Image (tube, rainbow, N blue to C red):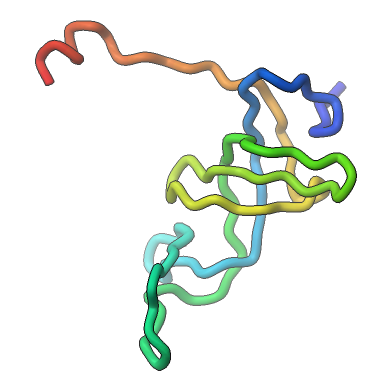
Amino acid sequence: METQIEDINTGEAWACRFKVQTFVDPKTGVAVEEKNLAVGMPHKGIPGMYEGIGLIQVRDNDTKIVQLLDTVSQITFKVKFEDCWDVDTVEWINPPAEAEIEA
């Protein structure tokens, strides 16, 4: 049985695939965000549908909206539960201790 967002336990790290209408880079298809864009300045993205994998930050069972941090663009999105699928726990992988010492 597939896990639903409503069923996940709080206090655990979860992620899911999602889709959202946003600005995307026309060459890569990755979501883009412009901060402090002045009036009349062009946006580097074009409107489009974006699909990604997001870490679940906040879940509201009353409004059926989840706040996700996209793993590729690092943009935060608020997405309806119905636009999310493949809900699963996050397996955190830490870099080897040797890599931390060399850095």
